[in-house]
Image 1 (cartoon, rainbow, N blue to C red):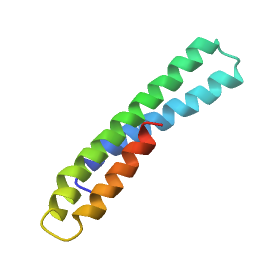
Image 2 (image 1 turned 60 degrees about the vertical axis):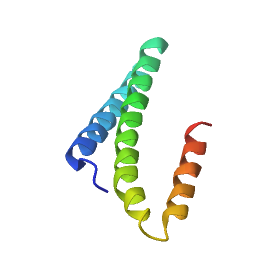
Image 3 (image 1 turned 60 degrees about the horizontal axis):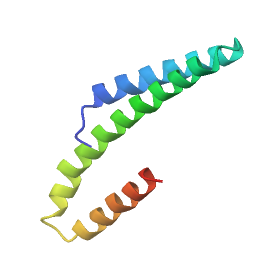
Length: 87
C-alpha cells in the first residue's frame, strides 16, 4: 500500500476516539440526534480513510498489474469491493 500511512492512522485514531465518546454519550443517555450526528461523523471519517486506501490501491497495485497477468484478478477485486460498498 502506498497511501500516506500517518494520515490514515491519524484518521483511524480520531475515529476510535469518537467511538469511545459515542459510547460515553450512550452511557449518559445523550440526546439521540447528537449521538446520531457523532455516528455519522465517524462513518464519514472512515469513508475518507477507505477512499484514500482504495485510491492508493488503484494507483499502485492495479496500475502495476496492468503490465502483468494479474490485471483481471485486481479488477475483479475492485469490482467486488465496489459492489459491497454500494449495498
